[in-house]
Image (tube, rainbow, N blue to C red):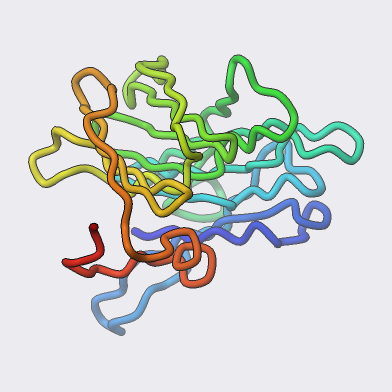
Length: 212
């Protein structure tokens, strides 16, 4: 499976957002849309689909402005969907919302859910305010809550041996965090404008000499 977010979807109001689940079709060689996901409490300007991740039977969707009051951007939220391969009366292969997660200390403008990632063991949530939340993927309890010095851009993923979390930060920095303690191991500056590449192309160039 793969998932694509569309935070501009207007089904439940301008900018309420949506996400789409696709499955690879080995016969056609293409990807077939299985289901459109929306939040159970979808509202205008939530930006559901501003970040997405999928692993196994679980899909994670961020709504970085969810919970807004008046004209202020809300603190944000993350929604968890679980795959259910049974017939629900209208279709097979349903992805059902099972939980909504918010930050315990969330305030307007935090953008909780600005970026998300999921592995077998952990759910990772980043905020536009430069915070990193790590939850246990099994019980969804908070394992760690850290502040990223220069502002969070994107949790890229884990090192090949699974011992480090790699984070791209504003200011063209890359940091490594120990998975066992969730403490900062090292931070380096790069020669490329990470924020520019991410915002404009949603990719990071794989250049072996991008580090100073």
